[in-house]
Image (cartoon, helix red, strand yellow):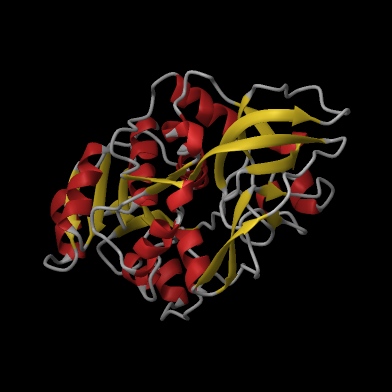
Length: 344
């Protein structure tokens, strides 16, 4: 079989390796589709502090089960499945207190250990979840990013009377907008420097858009909210200084919540006054937990808008195009999905 390996920043190889056989507690999965995440891009560019090399990237993975180990019973040959990428011990404080996504010994497929950009993969049955056969592989590849929207908005305690500000309208920003609307948020305001991304965000729940390149963000929010400010803000842009930007006066109201989404390691100019002057909550979020099955169910029930969420579909045999687009971004390629032969 073929597998894609990032050997070091900005270098990758396509290798021919034997098809793996499942251990007693594992299932063998023929990969059908794999999303390309921003973290995959950072891994290739050497910008992900959690990555190690050489590495098979990919954590947005769906496929069909082709073999099962002798100790497996919940998953059967022929099942369509999505793969949980958060490997946890189940015994530490975090795992026993409902925070297994930040397990003391957490290991993440696709960054800390090998992921799913390969034709076959063997995974422990406990990390594999059955999904509806009615879902196309193109859509099913979006389950993982949708779980991020569900988890981060749960962490941010989004509810019906919230006025939400989202900085950054890439795929995750638009997914957060949609998740907020599904939770009944009163108003969603999206902000970016790309007019095409802002226009796209309106399809996924944005009531208002602000271009921070040409508009005063705080002033626009004050106009939209009648001088009150937003109740919760998501930093889905995650550039050096973006968290400071979200915390500037005029964006968040007193008692507001801030949910930063990224792993930017550049220090920012934050002060205690910026937080305590308004008694803000700064709420971390990482990956997701217990969202796979409910998210796949919502997708099967048609509760998400999916059309236009993924924009660029690339056959695995042409995976060089993924890396070409990483090195030479195209404004139209908002979200890439890799399709394996039978899913095209």
